Every structure is written in C-alpha cells, then in structure tokens.
Image 1 (cartoon, rainbow, N blue to C red):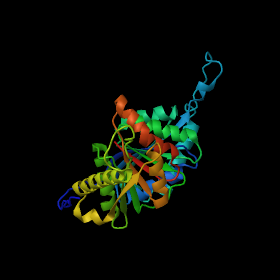
Image 2 (image 1 turned 90 degrees about the vertical axis):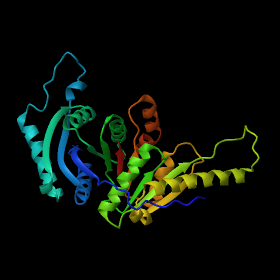
Image 3 (image 1 turned 90 degrees about the horizontal axis):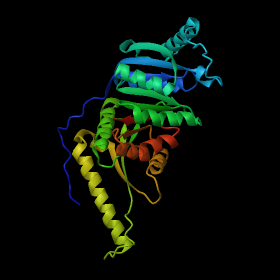
Image 4 (image 1 turned 45 degrees about the vertical axis):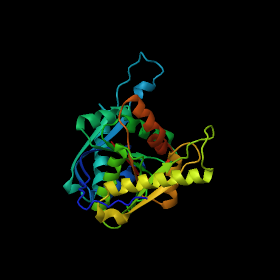
Length: 311
C-alpha cells in the first residue's frame, strides 16, 4: 500500500456561525438545545441567534372550514408571556449571551413552514432544533428540515450528553464528505486536544456470483478491503493537517445487510461518540434520493447523539 505524507500547511477555517436560528417548543426538549448551544458558544463564535417559537394554527383543525376562528397571537398577553418565558430560560442557560446578539419571536402557523421562512428571512447559516425521545413527528420534522434548509442543521436529541470529546464523520470520498470532515477538523482544533475524530467508511463487497472470477471469495474480500483501506488513507492524508493527524481514527466497516445508516448508528453507540457530522447532498431529485438513503435514515433511528448536517 502506498504511503502518503500528511500536508503540514493545510489551512482549516474556523467553524463559526453568523446567524443561528433556534426553534423552541417551550417544552422539555428546549433545555438540551440551550445547554448544547451554550457548550458550543464557549469555543465557537456565534454572532447572532434568533429564537423562534411557533404556536400551532388551531384554525386548521376546525371541522367547519367555513368558520374562521381567530388566531391566538392577536391576544397580546399570550405572545408576551411566551416571549418573557423564552427570554428567562435563555438568560438562565446561555453563559456567553453577552457575546451573542439575541432576538426572540413568537409566530402562529405550521412549525416546519415557519422555521423555513425564518431561516430564509434571517439568512441563517445554522438551524438548531430539538428532538424529543419517542416522538415520531420530531423525527419527521428533522428529516424534512434537513431536506429543505439551505444552511447547516443541528439536531439535538433530548437525551444528548452535554460534552464534546469525540466526533463521528461518515465518508464516501465525495465533496460532501470533504466539507463535513473539514467541519469536524475545525471543531477539533477549536475544542482542543480532548476532542478526537472517528473517520468511518462503510463499504460492501460487490456480488460477483454471476461472473467468472479467478479469485476465491477470501482473496476477493482481501482485495476489496485493501482497496477501500488505501482510499481511506489517501482521503485522510489529503485533507488532514499533520498537527491533527494523531487525533483522527480511520475505520473501515464492512456492510453485509441493507442500509448504511444502521451501521453508522451502531458504531456511534458502541464508541460512545458525542456528535455526528454528516454531509448533505444538494436539492436535485437524484441528490434528495441519496440524502434520504443515509442522512435521513440516520436521523430517523438516532435518538441520543446530536447530529450536525453540513450543507
């Protein structure tokens, strides 16, 4: 296997957030979001944070469409009470709030639609939402948000650990993998020596049963594994600054059953990683199908590990 020399002068830009949009439910899932955001803000520059709570549009549930029910928010006291509660909770949790320009808003409507509208209006480069355990609509909202948002998305499960010492980065050697890996490297540099990266490539053996091959199954497996290992090492050495090389663990995971996301989820649980950084495809139909096959599936089965989806 060829040896590659890690670049010594590779520049990794710091990970920073110009405008964060934080969705709040005014329920139990909010505290982990704020605590995790506080953890990040100690090492990551967050210039501005826009906190949004969406009151459901109850008029859409009326069995009589001809009846127009008044919205809740024109009642000034309701909106003001929610804003005061948001402000109090944020003030009590964010220790670095003096360095962050903070805004609050309460609107009425569909939560996903309002989040996407606000993300566009605010030009948010990071959207943060929570995920309550065993609540399927939260998983659906996370997957749909990742599909539609143009900026990075951070999903913080209710059971997330409030620490950051290990990051899992799945790679398929694409441009999206490079972006997610560079993001993880930036976080490793900013959070210091205590943060390690697990660089994982999931591969499978092609089915050659219908072809005539000169190698035994064991020989063929060895050949494929060596090929994938060399590709992983080349990726590692091409994009990893020498100063960070010892903090990156490159791993091959062989896939024998359908679905990559399940293997990533199992690896995250077995290794006890604190964050998963995944690349996302673009917005074409083909890219959305690819996104749905890995990132969305992972979000659908993950209930413990915060996930940063890099666009």
